[in-house]
Length: 337
Length: 288
Image (tube, rainbow over all chains, first blue to last red; front, side):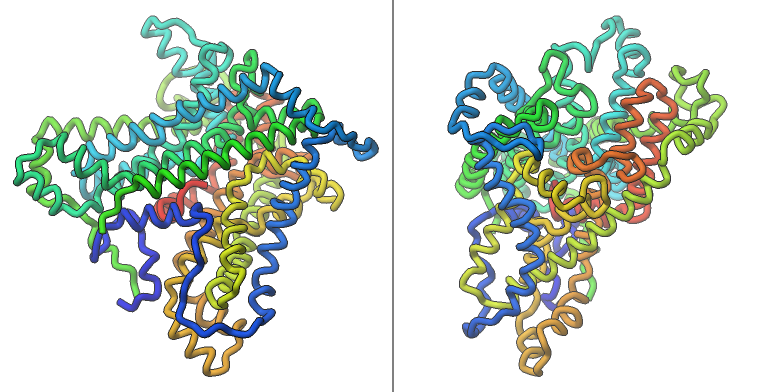
């Protein structure tokens, strides 16, 4: 087979020529590996030509116009007070926005909730899928394909639709799940109206979209572990748990780290739609996370300065987390070479 | 050249022994059935509820006694659902198409030419992925309103016309393209434009298809940017229409479920037809 598209293979299948896991991991991690050097292709250095810049123009112009320039503007805006009306001029206030935010209990509350969302997602985006994938590894043939087709579905359901589906199932008066729990004698739970439950409910809905997909990723990675390792360990008398601990988990570590990174970096953003559609951050601010707070400051209370300052804090925080995650991946991921 | 997928790797017979007998096999199915039901039941319930007549709406029967399409008729007459579905199709298809084109161009530039700055550019493109949209939303909104893009489909498409993800996916696919062929074409005097469209792009079928699927589905499901930009339902996309409908008629469960079903129908149809390809695209390319 000529090498043309060799790098592009369906991930779920086993490669004829080796483990797929590292491929999956590499494909995922590459886009996030920021400073990766570009392709080193044998070629003489050419004199400067304009052509590549013409090809790069559309992408770069769009990125600058819609991401980088706005990022700089948001940074500037974080030192100003402005109500977003075109007629009003922004007023310079220095670091006041940041000082105010730090003193606001709302901000602290939103940061704690952000942490809650992220940690609450872990069981659904990493832990349960990991063990389900290992536990169900010998499923074969038709059954495997059917399960695969079904558990993937939540991934492509629109967040607004997912929010509405769960709003109906969990409805306090007539929701199927509420009625079911009542029959079991657990009483009625205000899943979305009780401050003690709302945050957990939204975390669950966010995780619902991920659990099947993560399971499929782990299954693919697990299926690509070279069977001879397992065989060798068994001959050496390793126990089942021993094989999982010493062979499977280390070789699954790239996928574990990848999904953990995704959860940490994007988990709180994924929950935004559910907050906005279902609770508006309530009851009693119990479901407001940092991204919802930005939105509230920006487009409900119209304080662009606060929103931008909170945005900068969030951006910086997540940038540090991203750097940390990438360091961890480099340091701890075990690849099977 | 075909991609070899015949080696669907299955555990060896001896490996199955690693994990026990019949009870375990049943337990495995139980776990997967639970997970499947969890994944699919809410959607099933949406469809069942949408088919119930009004007086049956709170029934807990698993199938409506007298299925009806009344709820769908209600939705279609009450809000401009068809117009919104049309808008969403236009937005999603155009976004996907533009992402493919801008991604192909940028990836080609990075692969084909050796530039001193290509490392920096690659980094800039990749980093943009990490900027949360909520952080740049105010300047974006101000810019969109200055350009007169509020409440327009162009406004919904433009900021997403290029995406780091698209560039990087195509870049990594293109990198494995044999350089010898490019070199040969160049020596033959072919212009870079011709090489891109006649040699590179036709061989990028699989990654382009993957990218199109993911970009289309993501654009279809996009919620945040339309939320900022949209004013009138008839100029908006279906996600916003759905949210507006919920805010106004939140407890008309039958019509609400019908609206949700209509909004997800195109995606579900794509999934039914291209199931294998959709799953593989997402698995290869990750979560967006």
